[in-house]
Length: 204
Image 1 (spheres, one colour):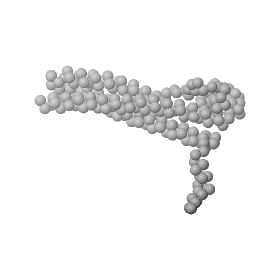
Image 2 (cartoon, helix red, strand yellow):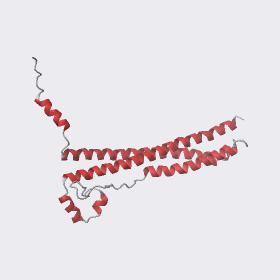
Image 3 (cartoon, helix red, strand yellow):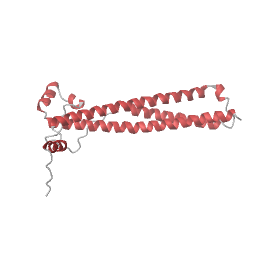
Image 4 (cartoon, one colour):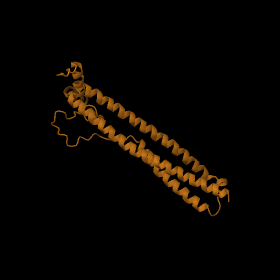
């Protein structure tokens, strides 16, 4: 009768190590890494928003030049001029709306962590030693005293709350950016429509 060989002790230890919960210091380091990633995403969103604003400025400059030069507007025929004017006015309205959308995507925003129904008497309730509004709510001595009393569990809980707040902020920015780039596509199509009217007029 064959007897299965016992698994190596080292392998069993490795499996248990992989499945165990993180200890307090490991959780602290992981949460700090998650916070760094959230800040990097905020920076990426801001760069994408600034790039969209540069593209929008270029489109607006092209439309402004075309709309203020008499020699260009004279290329339009009498039948296409009202349509071109209507498209031009629509473009202006769309451009103003999505410029405000760009401001909304780039504004710093304020997302104070929401603790909801988290009972204050729980041992892991955040002590309020990291978030700036909690810091300035105390005087210097009170803030130091809070650091003297905070536990590792409370500190990790506050880090988790901050990461959650940053992720909410990132989500709001991503939604605003999607709307902004949708607006850029619409503005490009409108500009293409204006150019098409000029081309059609030139061939008549």
